[in-house]
Amino acid sequence: PEDVNVEYNEDEELEQILATITSGIANKFELDRVSLLGRNLDLDYVIGRLEEYGMVDVVGNSIYPTKYGYATSISFLYPKDAEIIREAIKNKEEIMELIVKILPFDNTYISPSLKNKLSRIFHINIPSKFVDALQIIKENFERVREKHLKEMLIPIILEFEGEEEIVPKISKTIINLRMNKKTPSQISKILYEDYRIQTYSGDIYTYLENVIKLLDAIERIGNMYNKNYAI
Image (cartoon, rainbow, N blue to C red; front, side):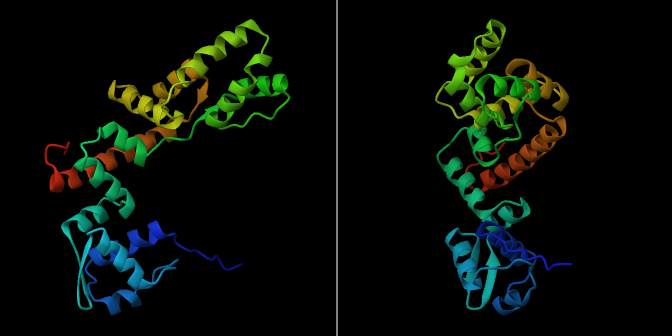
């Protein structure tokens, strides 16, 4: 079998090194000897970035996690996402806006039957992703002659015609439906019936679980910087 070459990107490597520091390895030389599959960046650079974020304190060759660094690590956040949360807290940004900024739901697809029908009308292979498909529908809408199909498409186009981006809007819809006690299966059905957006209830379930984890992270960081923001 061929060797698999795994390399972390910067976000992943910062997260992993911070987790290692938080686990109790405080000496720089010990930290450098820790075998992390996929390490790619110079350790001094990584520590410097974490220090800039205020997530570690460096004293000689010893590195200690700050309360902020510890909260970031146990929340399994990328440091850059923790920074987005901290800035949002300071600026008193709406929590819903913060959630969809960090955690958008983009597993949305156009229904196969509509995709196939429009592909024949437009003589274009309509993409499966809803956002990409909607753009092509808007650009080619004048070519739709069938009255029933027009009546189906117009509300969808109008719903996503405003300034708000499509993915954050759908993400908020999912969260709001769950807040109204809809199950993932019911949410999936509503998205299909209202907008011909195909989703999978398993994806929605996983997304909502991750939203809960993100809310926990926001609360941890909020308790440090603005208790009134904490949920």
